[in-house]
Amino acid sequence: MTRYETDEWRDGAWKGPFGDRFMRTLATPKLMLVRGEGARVWDVDGNEYLDFLAGIAVNSLGHAHPALVEAVTAQVGTLAHVSNYFSTPPQLELAERLRRITGAGESGRVLFGNSGAEANEAAFKLARLNRTGPHGRRTRVLALHNAFHGRTMGSLALTGKPPMREAFEPLPGGVEHIDSTIEALEASIDGHVAALFVEPIKGEAGVLDLPDGFLERARELTEKHGALLIVDEIQTGVGRTGEWFAYQRAGILPDAVTVAKGMAGGVPIGALVTFGWASELFSQGQHGSTFGGNPLATAAGNAVLAEIERAGLVQNAARRGEELKQIIRDLDHPLIDAVRGHGLLIGIGLTEGEAHRLSDAALAEGLIINAPNESSIRLAPPLIIGDAELAGFRERFGRALAAV
Ligand code: PLP
Image 1 (cartoon, protein in one colour):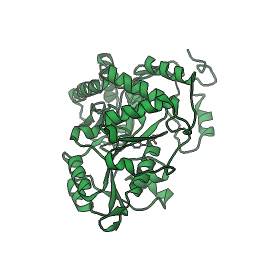
Image 2: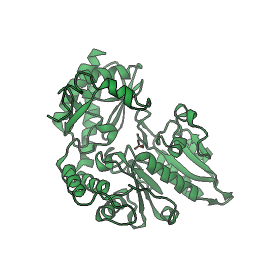
Image 3: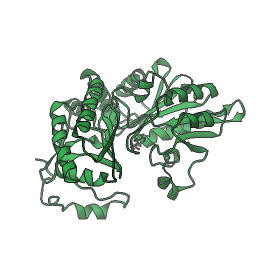
Image 4: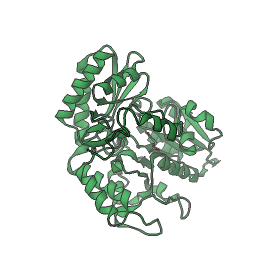
């Protein structure tokens, strides 16, 4: 039992203080969680849940994985933070791992930050540095309708969801949103484009795949016109889709990739990784962050990525993802319209707008899933799941479907 499991917080007593103490940006959550182990978490009242959301694709190794616990404990007891006036071994090690698994190789460079939005801010600045095209100044930055890139002003400008943006305008300029079609790419990319941002599977929009051939054509056209192809792998990256990165399924290399969420298993981190000529754009003093790349976060990143490799979790995500999709299809429920996504980032399209009711019913059955909108369910369990977790999902999700 943790020290929080007291009457101060039990039986919903935490809800009042939650409503009073936080900015109104946060809705009052359904549960107060106090501990986790593997793919399971427990609430303050002692109830157990199967976690098929993993902190929105963050807890790659599940909860309280010994490899992460040991690495973080050892690092915080040795050297937690030093600022970027000094180097540390974990940051150099993580940068090298990222160059290897992204395919950037020796021409790759890494810039560490603390979140996904921050990684995309850095990528947006990179885009501005791709200044000169065949017709003078490159002024256009392209991104996709319905894609999500974060909540800071720059990443919000890239986000293709007008209702999220409108209250905060004017946002940094020059961003145009296009449809996720090959025709839209062909009609939009020219010598005035500095960069194209792509979310390879739109997670926040309900786990929507891009059309076949989209990334390949995006690569051809951006290369032809000298625009940067920047892939946001914040939700899809580090093994979740059954590849280290989703662009690898298309057999292409981008000019830059943004990584965060699952990279350090819950310790905040973000990174921009550049490839080839894009690695030469930033110069000294043009970007930085106090915490970015600190030894604590990068030690956590090394532990997570090393364990993903050691335990074959990229392959496990591919295999378990297929099994999970089959389980959902076999339930053969009239509410289920489509099963989308790759690996362990799965979307369930619903025939009716019942997603919130279904996710509430699942929670009542001890299963954490997510409704990014009224017509989709998102599943993003830890990459470690096996037969027992899949059986638990089948049982609890089946009961939730029967209840709505
Ligand atoms: N980009 C994508 C594709 C995301 O899914 C998210 C978060 O959900 C972000 C960017 C923003 O990341 P963060 O919430 O760490 O700022």
